[in-house]
Amino acid sequence: MLLIGVIFLIVIPSLPHPLGTGLDASWAFGLNMGHFDRMIFGRDIVFTYGPLGYLIFPTFPEAEPWAVFAFAWGSASVIAYALWKLCRYAAHWTTMCLYLGVFWVCSAFLFDFPSEHIMAAIIAVSLVVAARFEDKPWFDLGILFFLAGVALLTKFNLGIIALLVALCFEASLLWRHRSAGPVLKPAAVALMIWLSTFAGLYWMLEGTPWGLAAFLRNSVEIVRGYSDAMGWPGPLWAAIAAVLCCMVLICIPLAASEIRRIAWGIPPLGVISFMCFKSAMVRQDYIHTPLFPFQIAMAALLLVALAPTPRNRIVVGVFAFASLALGITMVTQLAPAYLPSDLDRLTGRAALRNLNGFLHWKATLETWEANAKQALTSDQLPWEFRPYVAGKRVDAYPWEIAMIRANHLRWQPLPVIQAYSAYTPDLDLLNARKLEDASGPEEILLSWGAIDGHHPFYETPHSWRALLNWYDLQVASPNLYLLRRRSTARFDPPVAAGNVVVARWDQRITLPTVGNDEALVMEADIEESLKGVLKRTLFRSPAVYVRPVFRSGLFGTARVVRVNLREGVIVNFVPIGLSDLRPIFSGGGKLVGDRVASISFETDDPAEYDPLIQVHWWRQRLHDPAM
Image (cartoon, rainbow, N blue to C red):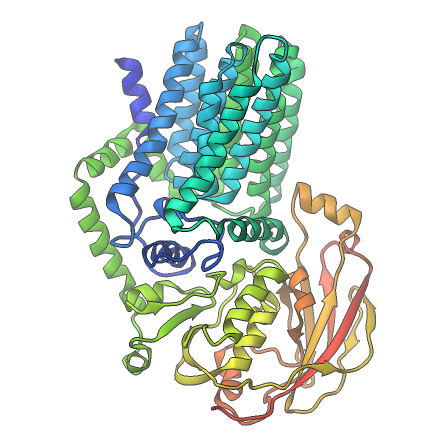
């Protein structure tokens, strides 16, 4: 009973967090509204999260309360099952204490992040598979494949981790037991569990299987472009500590006993460690980086599960203790605001409060909705906007979807629901085509904003060109424009302008001369060197900047999404706010304001890119006023 009580306190999930305005709340509202409106994920909605993502960050009444409850307690039940089995398999009380102690501390610092609850379930089931490795644990491997299918539809990178770990174990089991009777049939059944879970759940959720290929393709595009577009450096000491943590983990098998046995766990341990390290280091911020030491402490238990010898328990226990200490230090230094809630979870008080909230589920939902309604009051539209959006298909660009929810508008999103997530030319093109098509949003609530120092034009250049081409200003406030769709394009088709330029880093490039009624479009091809490819794969890419110099002598610096420069960005006109765009959206036949005379490209580490940058120029004439 004591064991059951301890496990129960560890696994109790957190209650849904009330949401307000801003970037993160907006994509959570978007996932839930997309689910509620029966949009097809992968076709109508493209994002890091899939059709089950709304269950991690639910909003009500869009999310079904029973589904949120079942999903939260379903992942908790999987962790509880795995911990129970691990403790039952443990031949020594110290092994049991090691499992429970690591998960107890990790639960305090991870489980308030709903996606980490799923990550913990993946690791916990992996430990059960490892602990029963000699006994052909096909049932538990089937659970792991099932989790992989669910995770792919929840948050794509979690699904990739679960699937790769499951495949590593399956390959190891097939090889290990190749001469001990038939193993192909249970291996095929385990793999079919993943396929049927992934495809079957998608079909059930979306009502059609035909969006599945687009879901996979576009999710891979997001994963492919994430490291390049979303890299964000943090404290050097945290990065060094994470690298040292990985290096020590690599050396642990050399210090452990029964090396041949624990060697079977090295591939799945490598997958988990690398993917978690990558996530922590690409965006080295106060959210992602402190999670890594806790994740790797749980993953290291694989070596004990495979060979729970006294020596292995000591070696892994010391490593886990050091990793947990490092994680607590990172939280203290990088995210001190989380410490009070983490300590409450560590002492069990938060778990009991969460349990009380789930026991009084109806009251919890009522409180959530009241808090969300209050928080969304700041996103109420000005009164002069409301007559124009009533009954229209409306989107918010670049990412304030909370405004749609706050005003109960009819939402018609672009495929990539928040512009900064269009990390690659293909994703940017998806949004641009929707803006150019007559089936696109009738009205767009436009604000001016980008993340990580990006300039909006250089973040999603094709989408911005489509937006300027096909929308007019209808109503304006200081920080928000309401745009309506035009019947004809504002710009003429692009034509070549000037000669192809081959430039070097930090070289000043003089722009070709164009008229005041013309936009100069630049296509820049910045290729990576071999060093850059390796660093992007193992760590992250250095940021690339453009430095425009205006005719007035003023200059600035803007971060760019490197690969999206191939789509063509308007370069002779660099707005710094909505007011600079008003003359274009209002009509008048020319671009006004200070024009750019020259530009240069800069980066902190030019050796990671090709020394030569090829630049093509195009010009587009602005030919008519608003229509």
